Length: 380
Image (cartoon, rainbow, N blue to C red; front, side, top):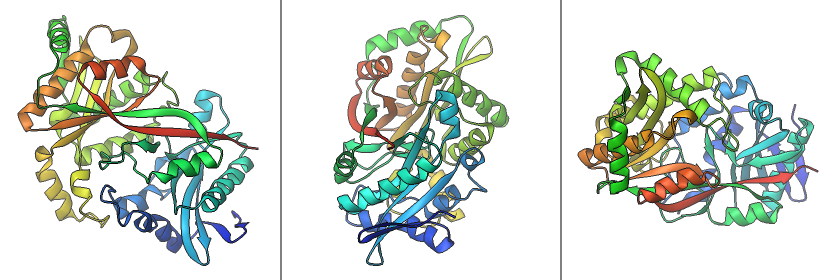
């Protein structure tokens, strides 16, 4: 059993009961009650995420949630979790933190970080990385720039003062993640159009919408491309078959098939693009309440009427990256967006070290408007 930690007037306790999990999930409402840009998470989905029987992350790694109390009042929360997949893939001994929320208290934040560190040290970890909820394949990064707009679907959000709390507690930047804003009400730059036109004449190349009648075969192709195309990126962790299945299931709940594409050369899948309607446009008004079948039906009915989309996946296998396939998919995004009246799309997240992708997006007219940060701290 995980123990309780005492820090002067602050007590940090492990979440072990259903009522504690409710407090953990509901605590953000205290932090964001006056923030118009916060999108409340769907409570029912949060409960599923933290259920080891429903989240395949727990099949390979451990996680412990904590609540911080002062004078019997919850003042913060955090998760400490291992990621055996990350450590095996990168030959690392990192531990991870996520789901951090805290009142504006340095002592409260340090109590949470110290508790997570002690738990991770017991697991043999030598440094902390985060925030990641629970991995880079989930929501990741602390927002450090771009607080004037709500987050896109499956992107994080937090108060400005969190950056100060992290850095005053000894965390330093490990990697920044960029979000780019792309206006879809105009045609793409001529250079992109020219490259796309040339690519479209390539013998054997086809970029097509996925076949919903063969959804399992199609989504398997998307996941294989995802795992291969991002394999050399900083922090990349390939999805397990179980995680892939859940990810696809979650995507298909909200996806518009007109924005799910696969690029093939002579029948071989070499690239993919997955753009999701920004359902946060509607979730921001639901206050986290359980999504009834009627609510879900309403959201799906209007999925072609969203003003914004998020380019969730856009990638080409390394050996096929010089044929303009990405430009062809960008051009198709503009074309589909213009047809549907989409105002703009967010391309996120992009590693700061991915200079080629950042340059391409900038050449498309993209504006970098949000920055998320992954921090690290040595475990002593």
